[in-house]
Image 1: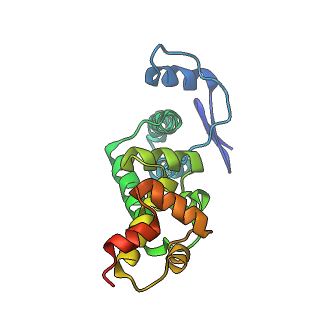
Image 2: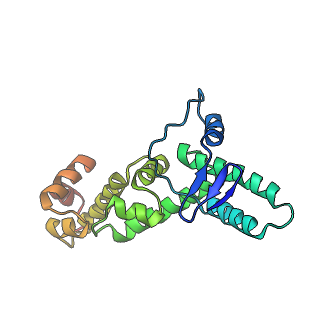
Image 3: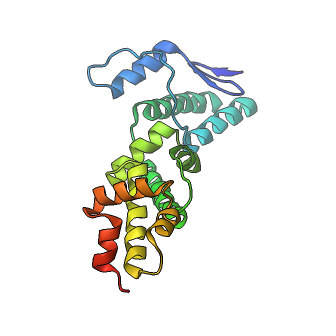
Amino acid sequence: MLCFGKVGIFISSVGIDKKYFENIYRKYIPGNPDFKNDWIQFVISHEVMVYIKKFITEYQERIIGYKDILEALSEIICHSLIRGIVGVKTEKNLISDNFEIENIIEYMHQHFGQKITVEELAKKTNMSKSHFIRVFKKITGLSPMDYLINIRIEKAKKLLGAGTKNISEISFLCGFNSLSHFSSTFSKIVGVSPSKYNSLYSRN
């Protein structure tokens, strides 16, 4: 362990003095309640990892002025970790989130006919499942699965309008696991059944 002041850097974790942590934590929470020591999962940003590596380097090399730098890094690391816990976003974080979600939406468009799970999508963004769902909904207004279903229905409408494939084929191509599920979902979103839509809008 590398330890300086209120912060200790372990091989696989960061240890912070409880009172020091709580004093900073209260600055971020209305009413300034004490921190509840629950198990919380959140993604540590690349920026925080850079600060931690810098902390380790300064501690090991001990170049003149290192104590002042370690003290400053200790505070930065603590603030950054608390921001991750309470969900405070910097402009850089927000841009990063938008970029990640745009990539996921592009992936949905390219693979809409395949089996896709929320867990798989979250993994691609290096976010926890709950955080990914929250970020996705904040940016798009829909849950990941609702967004994917809308993509599938829009693709189905185009295929039905083309009139080159039957409804069962379209159901399969658009990623639905059964014709009945496709029909009920299509009817709910579009307002008419796939067969009715086909008769109204098919070019053939």
